[in-house]
Length: 380
Image (tube, rainbow, N blue to C red; front, top):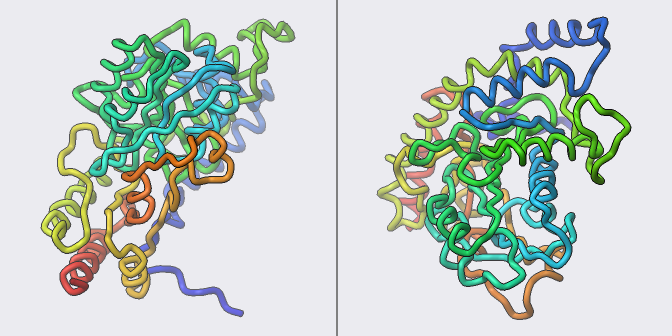
Protein backbone atom coordinates (compact mmCIF):
# COMPACT_ATOMS: atom_id res chain seq x y z
CA UNK A 1 0.00 0.00 0.00
CA UNK A 2 1.41 3.40 -0.95
CA UNK A 3 1.51 6.20 1.58
CA UNK A 4 -0.96 9.06 1.09
CA UNK A 5 0.51 12.16 -0.55
CA UNK A 6 1.88 14.83 1.75
CA UNK A 7 -0.42 17.83 2.14
CA UNK A 8 0.38 20.86 0.03
CA UNK A 9 0.27 22.97 3.19
CA UNK A 10 1.56 20.89 6.11
CA UNK A 11 0.54 21.70 9.67
CA UNK A 12 3.90 20.55 11.06
CA UNK A 13 6.74 21.44 8.65
CA UNK A 14 8.73 18.31 7.76
CA UNK A 15 11.92 20.30 7.06
CA UNK A 16 11.83 22.35 10.25
CA UNK A 17 15.54 21.94 11.02
CA UNK A 18 16.89 21.37 7.53
CA UNK A 19 18.64 24.74 7.43
CA UNK A 20 20.49 23.81 10.62
CA UNK A 21 21.48 20.28 9.59
CA UNK A 22 25.19 21.04 9.21
CA UNK A 23 25.35 22.92 12.51
CA UNK A 24 23.52 20.15 14.37
CA UNK A 25 25.83 17.45 13.06
CA UNK A 26 28.86 19.54 14.00
CA UNK A 27 27.51 20.08 17.51
CA UNK A 28 26.77 16.38 17.89
CA UNK A 29 30.39 15.62 17.06
CA UNK A 30 31.69 18.42 19.27
CA UNK A 31 29.77 17.28 22.35
CA UNK A 32 30.40 13.61 21.71
CA UNK A 33 34.16 14.06 21.43
CA UNK A 34 34.50 16.63 24.19
CA UNK A 35 37.15 15.32 26.64
CA UNK A 36 34.85 16.35 29.47
CA UNK A 37 32.34 13.69 28.35
CA UNK A 38 29.47 15.45 30.07
CA UNK A 39 26.18 15.01 28.24
CA UNK A 40 23.66 16.53 30.68
CA UNK A 41 23.71 19.71 32.79
CA UNK A 42 27.12 20.81 31.59
CA UNK A 43 28.57 24.13 30.54
CA UNK A 44 26.44 24.28 27.39
CA UNK A 45 23.25 24.00 29.42
CA UNK A 46 24.52 26.71 31.77
CA UNK A 47 25.32 28.95 28.80
CA UNK A 48 21.83 28.46 27.36
CA UNK A 49 20.25 29.26 30.73
CA UNK A 50 22.38 32.42 30.96
CA UNK A 51 21.36 33.45 27.44
CA UNK A 52 17.66 33.17 28.23
CA UNK A 53 17.98 34.80 31.63
CA UNK A 54 19.73 37.84 30.21
CA UNK A 55 17.33 38.13 27.27
CA UNK A 56 14.25 37.94 29.49
CA UNK A 57 15.58 39.92 32.44
CA UNK A 58 14.63 36.99 34.69
CA UNK A 59 16.13 36.22 38.09
CA UNK A 60 16.74 32.63 37.05
CA UNK A 61 16.17 30.20 34.17
CA UNK A 62 16.42 26.47 34.87
CA UNK A 63 16.58 24.02 31.98
CA UNK A 64 14.85 20.67 32.46
CA UNK A 65 13.66 17.65 30.52
CA UNK A 66 10.29 18.94 29.22
CA UNK A 67 7.66 21.62 29.64
CA UNK A 68 5.54 19.14 31.57
CA UNK A 69 8.39 18.38 33.94
CA UNK A 70 9.02 22.13 34.32
CA UNK A 71 5.43 22.62 35.47
CA UNK A 72 5.72 19.78 37.99
CA UNK A 73 8.96 21.25 39.34
CA UNK A 74 7.36 24.66 39.81
CA UNK A 75 4.48 23.22 41.84
CA UNK A 76 6.83 21.13 43.97
CA UNK A 77 9.06 24.15 44.55
CA UNK A 78 5.98 26.06 45.74
CA UNK A 79 5.26 23.30 48.27
CA UNK A 80 1.94 22.33 46.72
CA UNK A 81 1.01 19.16 48.60
CA UNK A 82 -1.85 16.77 49.48
CA UNK A 83 -4.86 18.62 50.84
CA UNK A 84 -4.21 21.70 48.69
CA UNK A 85 -6.35 22.81 45.77
CA UNK A 86 -5.00 24.40 42.59
CA UNK A 87 -7.40 26.16 40.23
CA UNK A 88 -6.67 25.31 36.58
CA UNK A 89 -8.48 25.86 33.26
CA UNK A 90 -11.05 23.26 32.26
CA UNK A 91 -9.78 23.45 28.67
CA UNK A 92 -6.19 22.74 27.76
CA UNK A 93 -3.33 20.28 27.88
CA UNK A 94 -3.33 17.31 30.27
CA UNK A 95 -0.27 18.50 32.26
CA UNK A 96 -2.38 21.34 33.62
CA UNK A 97 -4.20 18.81 35.77
CA UNK A 98 -1.62 16.02 35.88
CA UNK A 99 1.09 18.23 37.35
CA UNK A 100 -1.28 19.09 40.19
CA UNK A 101 -2.34 15.52 40.90
CA UNK A 102 1.33 14.51 40.84
CA UNK A 103 1.88 16.56 43.99
CA UNK A 104 -1.11 14.93 45.69
CA UNK A 105 -3.11 18.15 45.43
CA UNK A 106 -6.53 18.49 43.81
CA UNK A 107 -7.11 20.29 40.50
CA UNK A 108 -10.19 22.52 40.54
CA UNK A 109 -11.45 23.25 37.04
CA UNK A 110 -12.52 26.77 36.07
CA UNK A 111 -14.36 27.61 32.86
CA UNK A 112 -12.71 29.70 30.15
CA UNK A 113 -13.50 32.92 28.36
CA UNK A 114 -15.28 32.19 25.06
CA UNK A 115 -13.19 34.65 23.04
CA UNK A 116 -9.64 33.84 24.17
CA UNK A 117 -10.16 30.24 25.38
CA UNK A 118 -8.07 31.10 28.45
CA UNK A 119 -9.22 30.70 32.06
CA UNK A 120 -11.86 33.22 33.16
CA UNK A 121 -10.54 35.17 36.18
CA UNK A 122 -14.06 35.64 37.55
CA UNK A 123 -14.69 31.89 37.43
CA UNK A 124 -11.37 31.25 39.15
CA UNK A 125 -12.20 33.77 41.88
CA UNK A 126 -15.55 32.08 42.47
CA UNK A 127 -13.85 28.72 43.07
CA UNK A 128 -11.40 29.85 45.77
CA UNK A 129 -11.88 28.03 49.07
CA UNK A 130 -9.96 27.73 52.31
CA UNK A 131 -7.98 24.87 50.73
CA UNK A 132 -6.94 26.79 47.62
CA UNK A 133 -3.16 27.14 47.52
CA UNK A 134 -2.61 28.38 43.97
CA UNK A 135 -4.25 29.53 40.77
CA UNK A 136 -2.54 28.42 37.56
CA UNK A 137 -3.61 30.26 34.39
CA UNK A 138 -2.43 28.92 31.04
CA UNK A 139 -1.84 30.73 27.79
CA UNK A 140 -3.77 29.09 24.99
CA UNK A 141 -2.88 28.77 21.30
CA UNK A 142 -1.98 32.36 20.29
CA UNK A 143 -3.41 34.34 23.21
CA UNK A 144 -1.96 34.96 26.66
CA UNK A 145 -4.26 34.68 29.68
CA UNK A 146 -5.41 37.84 31.47
CA UNK A 147 -2.34 37.94 33.70
CA UNK A 148 -3.01 41.39 35.20
CA UNK A 149 -6.33 40.06 36.54
CA UNK A 150 -4.75 36.85 37.81
CA UNK A 151 -1.92 38.77 39.47
CA UNK A 152 -4.48 40.87 41.30
CA UNK A 153 -6.52 37.79 42.20
CA UNK A 154 -3.48 35.99 43.61
CA UNK A 155 -2.47 39.04 45.65
CA UNK A 156 -5.96 39.66 47.01
CA UNK A 157 -6.61 36.02 47.88
CA UNK A 158 -3.11 35.22 49.14
CA UNK A 159 -2.48 32.51 46.50
CA UNK A 160 0.63 31.23 44.74
CA UNK A 161 0.72 32.07 41.03
CA UNK A 162 2.42 29.50 38.78
CA UNK A 163 2.05 30.44 35.10
CA UNK A 164 1.68 27.77 32.43
CA UNK A 165 3.41 29.66 29.64
CA UNK A 166 4.62 26.50 27.86
CA UNK A 167 3.24 27.63 24.48
CA UNK A 168 3.96 31.33 24.88
CA UNK A 169 7.71 31.85 24.56
CA UNK A 170 8.18 35.19 22.83
CA UNK A 171 4.81 36.53 23.97
CA UNK A 172 4.79 39.88 25.77
CA UNK A 173 1.85 41.45 27.61
CA UNK A 174 2.08 45.08 28.73
CA UNK A 175 5.85 44.90 28.42
CA UNK A 176 6.20 41.76 30.58
CA UNK A 177 7.35 38.52 28.89
CA UNK A 178 5.17 35.43 29.19
CA UNK A 179 6.39 33.38 32.14
CA UNK A 180 7.37 36.38 34.26
CA UNK A 181 3.89 37.52 35.27
CA UNK A 182 3.57 34.64 37.70
CA UNK A 183 6.04 33.69 40.39
CA UNK A 184 7.42 31.17 37.91
CA UNK A 185 6.55 30.18 34.37
CA UNK A 186 7.64 27.51 31.91
CA UNK A 187 8.54 27.14 28.26
CA UNK A 188 8.40 23.95 26.22
CA UNK A 189 10.90 23.23 23.46
CA UNK A 190 9.13 20.31 21.78
CA UNK A 191 9.68 20.81 18.06
CA UNK A 192 6.35 22.46 17.18
CA UNK A 193 6.67 25.25 19.77
CA UNK A 194 7.78 28.71 18.69
CA UNK A 195 11.37 27.99 19.80
CA UNK A 196 11.21 24.24 19.36
CA UNK A 197 14.07 21.80 18.99
CA UNK A 198 14.50 18.22 17.71
CA UNK A 199 13.61 16.56 20.99
CA UNK A 200 12.08 17.10 24.42
CA UNK A 201 13.07 19.90 26.74
CA UNK A 202 11.88 22.93 28.62
CA UNK A 203 12.79 25.60 31.13
CA UNK A 204 11.45 27.20 34.27
CA UNK A 205 11.68 31.00 34.20
CA UNK A 206 11.23 33.04 37.36
CA UNK A 207 11.65 36.48 38.89
CA UNK A 208 12.33 34.84 42.27
CA UNK A 209 15.96 33.71 42.62
CA UNK A 210 15.25 31.57 45.69
CA UNK A 211 12.44 29.75 43.89
CA UNK A 212 14.74 29.19 40.91
CA UNK A 213 17.39 27.69 43.16
CA UNK A 214 14.87 25.29 44.65
CA UNK A 215 13.74 24.22 41.16
CA UNK A 216 17.40 23.72 40.23
CA UNK A 217 17.83 21.39 43.20
CA UNK A 218 14.62 19.45 42.56
CA UNK A 219 15.38 18.82 38.86
CA UNK A 220 18.41 16.71 39.79
CA UNK A 221 17.10 14.28 42.42
CA UNK A 222 17.08 16.92 45.14
CA UNK A 223 20.80 17.70 44.90
CA UNK A 224 22.30 21.18 44.83
CA UNK A 225 24.85 21.89 42.11
CA UNK A 226 28.35 20.86 43.11
CA UNK A 227 27.12 18.78 46.06
CA UNK A 228 26.34 15.36 44.63
CA UNK A 229 24.91 12.50 46.69
CA UNK A 230 23.41 14.82 49.29
CA UNK A 231 19.65 14.81 48.70
CA UNK A 232 17.78 17.67 50.36
CA UNK A 233 14.34 16.73 49.03
CA UNK A 234 12.72 14.03 46.94
CA UNK A 235 13.26 15.47 43.50
CA UNK A 236 12.94 14.40 39.88
CA UNK A 237 15.25 13.34 37.10
CA UNK A 238 14.56 16.33 34.87
CA UNK A 239 17.93 17.19 33.40
CA UNK A 240 18.75 18.94 30.13
CA UNK A 241 20.77 17.51 27.24
CA UNK A 242 24.04 19.21 26.29
CA UNK A 243 23.57 18.66 22.54
CA UNK A 244 20.14 20.26 22.65
CA UNK A 245 21.48 23.14 24.76
CA UNK A 246 24.18 23.84 22.19
CA UNK A 247 21.65 23.60 19.36
CA UNK A 248 19.17 25.94 21.06
CA UNK A 249 21.93 28.45 21.69
CA UNK A 250 22.92 28.21 18.02
CA UNK A 251 19.35 28.84 16.80
CA UNK A 252 18.34 31.49 19.32
CA UNK A 253 19.58 34.44 17.28
CA UNK A 254 16.98 33.58 14.63
CA UNK A 255 14.10 33.26 17.11
CA UNK A 256 12.82 36.89 16.79
CA UNK A 257 12.67 36.60 13.00
CA UNK A 258 10.83 33.26 13.15
CA UNK A 259 8.39 34.67 15.68
CA UNK A 260 7.82 37.81 13.60
CA UNK A 261 6.98 35.68 10.57
CA UNK A 262 4.37 33.78 12.59
CA UNK A 263 2.96 37.10 13.80
CA UNK A 264 2.58 38.41 10.25
CA UNK A 265 0.81 35.24 9.15
CA UNK A 266 -1.54 35.40 12.14
CA UNK A 267 -2.31 39.08 11.52
CA UNK A 268 -3.15 38.31 7.89
CA UNK A 269 -5.44 35.45 8.90
CA UNK A 270 -7.23 37.61 11.46
CA UNK A 271 -7.73 40.42 8.96
CA UNK A 272 -9.24 37.97 6.47
CA UNK A 273 -11.34 36.06 9.00
CA UNK A 274 -12.77 38.87 11.16
CA UNK A 275 -15.68 39.46 8.70
CA UNK A 276 -16.58 35.76 8.94
CA UNK A 277 -17.94 35.87 12.50
CA UNK A 278 -21.48 36.05 11.18
CA UNK A 279 -20.77 33.08 8.93
CA UNK A 280 -19.79 30.60 11.63
CA UNK A 281 -16.00 31.10 11.72
CA UNK A 282 -14.55 33.25 14.50
CA UNK A 283 -10.83 34.16 14.65
CA UNK A 284 -8.89 35.03 17.82
CA UNK A 285 -9.25 38.63 19.04
CA UNK A 286 -7.15 41.04 16.96
CA UNK A 287 -4.03 42.79 18.24
CA UNK A 288 -0.37 42.15 19.00
CA UNK A 289 -0.14 42.67 22.77
CA UNK A 290 -0.27 39.42 24.70
CA UNK A 291 0.10 37.25 21.59
CA UNK A 292 2.47 34.32 21.15
CA UNK A 293 1.51 32.71 17.79
CA UNK A 294 2.32 29.14 18.74
CA UNK A 295 -0.89 27.94 17.08
CA UNK A 296 -3.52 29.91 15.15
CA UNK A 297 -6.97 28.62 16.01
CA UNK A 298 -10.44 29.56 14.79
CA UNK A 299 -13.78 28.59 16.29
CA UNK A 300 -16.02 27.03 13.65
CA UNK A 301 -19.69 26.13 13.97
CA UNK A 302 -19.12 23.17 11.65
CA UNK A 303 -15.53 22.23 12.45
CA UNK A 304 -15.60 18.81 10.81
CA UNK A 305 -16.88 20.21 7.53
CA UNK A 306 -14.32 23.02 7.54
CA UNK A 307 -11.50 20.57 8.31
CA UNK A 308 -12.64 18.25 5.53
CA UNK A 309 -12.88 21.16 3.09
CA UNK A 310 -9.32 22.24 3.87
CA UNK A 311 -8.00 18.67 3.69
CA UNK A 312 -9.62 18.17 0.29
CA UNK A 313 -7.57 21.13 -0.94
CA UNK A 314 -4.29 19.97 0.58
CA UNK A 315 -4.31 21.93 3.84
CA UNK A 316 -3.56 20.04 7.07
CA UNK A 317 -5.29 21.17 10.27
CA UNK A 318 -5.30 19.98 13.86
CA UNK A 319 -7.76 19.59 16.74
CA UNK A 320 -5.82 19.81 20.01
CA UNK A 321 -8.32 19.23 22.79
CA UNK A 322 -11.51 17.45 21.65
CA UNK A 323 -12.88 17.32 25.21
CA UNK A 324 -12.49 19.44 28.34
CA UNK A 325 -10.05 18.20 30.97
CA UNK A 326 -12.70 17.09 33.50
CA UNK A 327 -14.31 14.95 30.79
CA UNK A 328 -11.23 12.70 30.59
CA UNK A 329 -11.29 9.46 32.61
CA UNK A 330 -8.02 10.48 34.25
CA UNK A 331 -9.46 13.68 35.69
CA UNK A 332 -13.18 12.93 36.00
CA UNK A 333 -12.73 11.86 39.67
CA UNK A 334 -11.78 15.47 40.46
CA UNK A 335 -14.90 16.93 38.84
CA UNK A 336 -17.90 17.67 41.06
CA UNK A 337 -20.96 15.57 40.11
CA UNK A 338 -23.14 17.37 37.61
CA UNK A 339 -20.68 20.24 37.09
CA UNK A 340 -20.49 21.81 33.64
CA UNK A 341 -18.02 24.07 31.91
CA UNK A 342 -20.08 25.42 28.98
CA UNK A 343 -17.41 27.57 27.36
CA UNK A 344 -14.77 24.84 27.62
CA UNK A 345 -17.23 22.36 26.14
CA UNK A 346 -17.99 24.75 23.29
CA UNK A 347 -14.31 25.33 22.57
CA UNK A 348 -13.67 21.57 22.52
CA UNK A 349 -16.39 21.18 19.89
CA UNK A 350 -15.46 24.16 17.73
CA UNK A 351 -11.70 24.85 17.73
CA UNK A 352 -9.62 24.12 14.64
CA UNK A 353 -5.94 25.01 14.32
CA UNK A 354 -4.55 26.22 10.98
CA UNK A 355 -0.92 26.13 9.77
CA UNK A 356 1.02 29.16 11.03
CA UNK A 357 4.66 28.01 11.11
CA UNK A 358 7.39 30.32 9.81
CA UNK A 359 8.25 28.14 6.78
CA UNK A 360 4.91 28.81 5.07
CA UNK A 361 5.14 30.80 1.86
CA UNK A 362 2.92 33.79 1.19
CA UNK A 363 1.13 31.76 -1.47
CA UNK A 364 0.39 28.98 1.01
CA UNK A 365 -0.92 31.45 3.59
CA UNK A 366 -3.19 33.08 1.01
CA UNK A 367 -4.37 29.64 -0.10
CA UNK A 368 -5.41 28.75 3.45
CA UNK A 369 -7.18 32.06 3.96
CA UNK A 370 -8.99 31.84 0.62
CA UNK A 371 -10.24 28.36 1.44
CA UNK A 372 -11.53 29.33 4.88
CA UNK A 373 -13.29 32.40 3.50
CA UNK A 374 -14.83 30.46 0.63
CA UNK A 375 -16.09 27.77 3.01
CA UNK A 376 -17.60 30.25 5.46
CA UNK A 377 -19.37 32.40 2.89
CA UNK A 378 -20.52 29.45 0.81
CA UNK A 379 -21.45 27.15 3.70
CA UNK A 380 -24.07 29.54 5.00
